Image: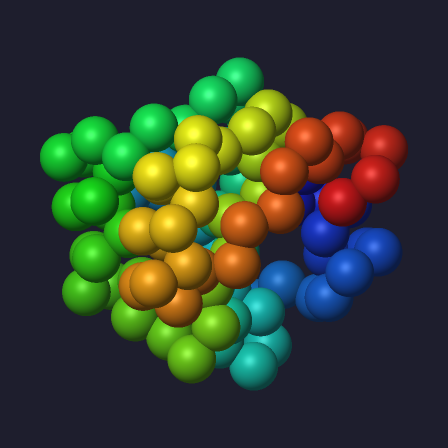
Length: 91
């Protein structure tokens, strides 16, 4: 997913694997690939979305599945952009 993002959406500068794989663009935006079916707003999701090391002007999560409505509202309120039903072929 990140390889396609790098070539088709925006070049990535760094890649980090601290529990969850994350990347940063050349401009510092955070990109999180999430090959999952559904994301619910759980304590773990809330802690992840607020991680200090992911602080950036822009953050986005790219899901192969969907995000539940409550999780969508919470992520959006924290400044995250959510891309649903992303496949490897199309970032």
